[in-house]
Length: 335
Image (cartoon, rainbow, N blue to C red; front, top):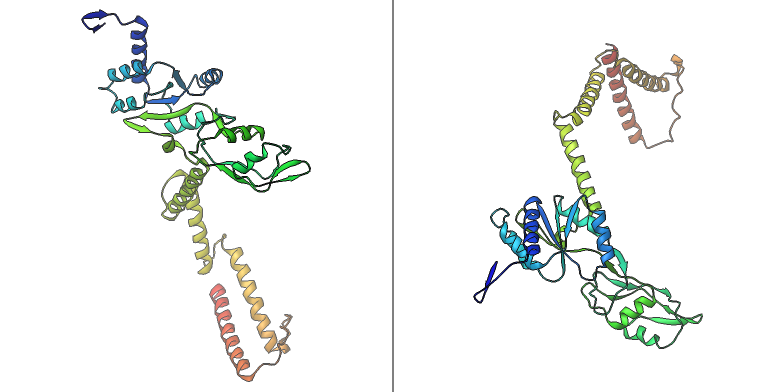
């Protein structure tokens, strides 16, 4: 009951029950959102409600009753009084335990394109594309001029000569523009539940805080995973996802070291024989070019064109050093 000018007025039972219901909803759900019902057809609201039934509880109620329910939970919900600043206009209240970002993206999926009406506020750039409008010349031609849309008449219709921005985010749609967009069958608006704010753990989030580029974040997460994986392998971090690659890397390093030091084991023998064969062929080729009488059966390299005496002497010196290195390599393998 409430007292008004000395008279006792009984609070209607339905209001008392509504406040009680809202109070319980505020206590039972960690996320509370306020969405704008303006211009949302009731049929679409019912469709959204039906689709989200198992994830989000939606309640259309009076702002004054919601305000009273908020007062009832001030001692258990941190800073929830901030929500009262947004209890204006026609609202629907959403109660859920899902992540606020997930809630935002879910509601974005249930928006449908719509024609702009005079007085609507553009949410994004509105562009009239270049091409044939299909509209014959007439009084509407002056509308194109007023909106500064370049045109020409061709084949008995009005053509737009280049893509033209006719409205930017935040601009109010004029009567002329709304009419023209409808004639061109351009639907720049979207109808759906528009979140005003979302409350979670004492924080008030606005739509601009919740709008994220999913693909961009996926790429960042992928890069972070790859970098973490590389670091884990580098430091041999003992995790299941890393240990297999770490062991493989250690095995390959050990094999390379064994081959380099001519350590003969069954795993290194094929590589060492292959390396020895290659070195032997190179050495035999070099010897055959110097001592053909040995008949080593290796084709000597074709003689190069005559060079200056200085360059030739330098090459002979280099070849001699290479032969010594090859011989040392063979000795290391079989010595």
